[in-house]
Amino acid sequence: MTASTPTPLTSDDDWWRSAVVYQVYVRSFADSNGDGVGDLQGIRERLPYLRDLGVDALWLTPFYTSPMVDGGYDVADYRDVDPMFGTLADFDAMITDAHALGLRIIVDIVPNHTSSAHPWFVAALAAAPGSPERARYLFAEGRGEHGELPPNDWESIFGGPAWTRVPDGQWYLHLFDPAQPDLNWRHPEVRAEFEGVLRFWLDRGVDGFRIDVAHGMIKAEGLPDVGFNSMTGGRRQSELLGKGRLPYFDQDEVHEIYRAWRPILDSYPGGRMAVAEAWAETPQRLARYIGPDELHQAFSFDFLDATWSADSFRKVIDTALAEATIVGAPTTWVLSNHDKQRHVTRYGDGEVGLRRARAASLLMLALPGCAYLYQGEELGLPEVLDLPDELRQDPSFLRTGESRDGCRVPIPWSGELAPYGFGPAGSELSWLPAPATWAALSVAAQAGAPGSTLELYRAALRARRAHPALARDADGVTWLETTGPGVLAFRRTGGGAELTCVVNLSDAPVRIDGYGQPVVASAELTGQGTGHVLPVDAAAWFERR
Image (cartoon, rainbow, N blue to C red; front, side):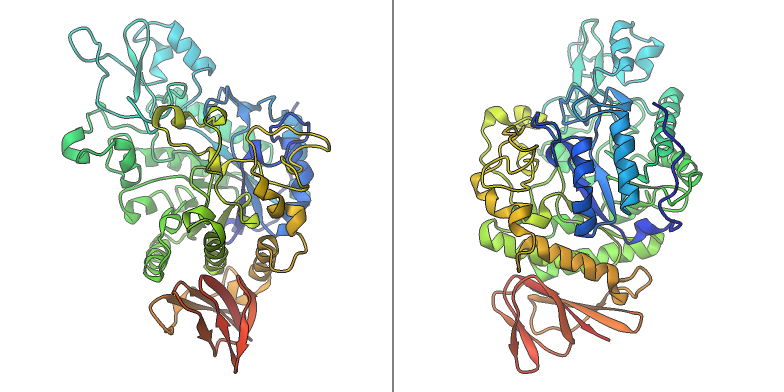
């Protein structure tokens, strides 16, 4: 079908500067037809839940035609919906309903590589070395007497060599799975194709793009060796992913691509935007992806990687805010996503991990800029660590033993038995099994329950949207003196009001006084004189007007 001309959601072109974006891992959010896999119609049916949660936008993981070797990040057709997830008509209906509810839609785009089932790569394998079909990818002759060795020493992020040999003797590059061949972004056809893909989805009304592996599309000329011994000190190259010291990441030429994309985004009404999943050696190099002639945002993963200490969080926050000031763009805060262990488990799991996760969420939501939530974190879901090996589907698991499946288990909606309302009534299918302990964490179990994690998120998001000191044009962070080294406190002001966020990362309760009345707290406060006692591993917002 042909998409109708979309109407801009609002006239606020800068909505992304302070938005709360909810990441939907499509396979694991809601299943409308009972096949055990989430889909677009399932998202559509649950849109009122997301509106009531209080988020501004949804980021959808890939739903395009794909063999699903890497959960959809191996795309065979960038302009269609995989039948597993529905149809283009389903997408159009979903985005129409989302906009009617005041929710914007960001979609994932995967430009570094295609699926090996993509028509371009099928044609490349059928063509001869040196052919135009192979020029769209990175094919090369091997080394050794008979070309039996890979062209260089590059490693796959998923483990093992980054090269696979084809029957005629050439090798092709895949920084991830062999089923994900890397494109040659110096080829004009590749650049033109993806500019067309952007326009295709912008014409259907999408409000933005999350760019997968945004730092990886350009490889150093000549495909030089990393020099495993000298540069990595014996470590696997994949361990240096966040260091930006590899000839296949963060090359200067990649910025030419985004300078060509920005005018396309700017030509559509309603503040269309793009956020980069980019890793770079320094904050200064990461900041280069952002600007009026490139991208609107780049994820700052340092906040996610901060340890549970006041010093670690403050250093990360100060660095991110300073870099944001330099480039004139908002910070992007994130605690969990589909590639990382859920922060309940990273912070210690069990009751300790949940307490800390709730406190970290309040800290994040009080900061200026844009916050990205990962589905299920509003329920306090932990990582599922005991999935049977035979059910794991992450391709990296087969090569390294490391798996991201534990954060991708379908979220619980209702009921006492798995899969907890993931599908329609009576459905017992779920592509990954949820643990028995999740009955108490379902949406139905937490909705309206005082003190539940879901109600904490709802309260915090309501306050964030309504409080003048948390508005987009409010002042930034002013750090305050605290009662000890394990306590963080900062103030924000705006509209004649003050809001102070206090986080207790110490090993003892602390007394809080002089900041006004509590607005929302991650744990129960007790009154003491004119102030309150904040428990260990807790955070609270206080206001004065």
